[in-house]
Length: 258
Image 1 (cartoon, one colour):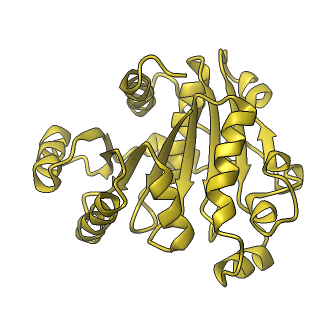
Image 2: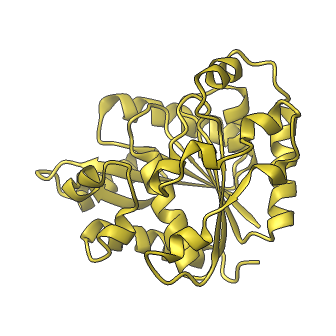
């Protein structure tokens, strides 16, 4: 199993949108994918798959507090995904809790941080996953740093924004100190009056890191509004093709997977 973490220094970069659509593309293309929503302060991955919170019996929070095994927090999304398209692989989700009391409790800390790494490794073995995608909480804290340290590949997601440029530099320094094997940049929400290839080249030169993808600001994505997957609702849209391109890039990154 390969672990890919997506992370942004600031919120609002479209990180969860990218990872949810990427997970769906990988599953449709035959990979066994486990998506872990570790955004403890604002989990949102379940929205993209039309999953109500009452359909999630146990969450990542329950596991971190020692209230359940990690396997109990798994929700199988494969059948749900097949309603809209052909799926040759599998997709499962482990989500942090959306309950206000749980969000406040987890943000105060005191949970078993060491369980996170052990649990995710165990989960990958149980599910026999090809790829585990972790939607890490924005910013830097102890569980997020642990998530980054586990990654075989870290996608740092940013917008062409000065705050994001500053935060990206901090994240890259942390990733280097944690000796993350591979780090790539994803640029999202590039304004229409910007030339995406030039932005990608400039960012790559600035940080001396490869840029895996540059995405324009998309009215299509905005219209979906986290209530679904753009790769299912608008499969022919340029942004959907870009998500599939990213899935192909990720697959070829480790050929053969397994």
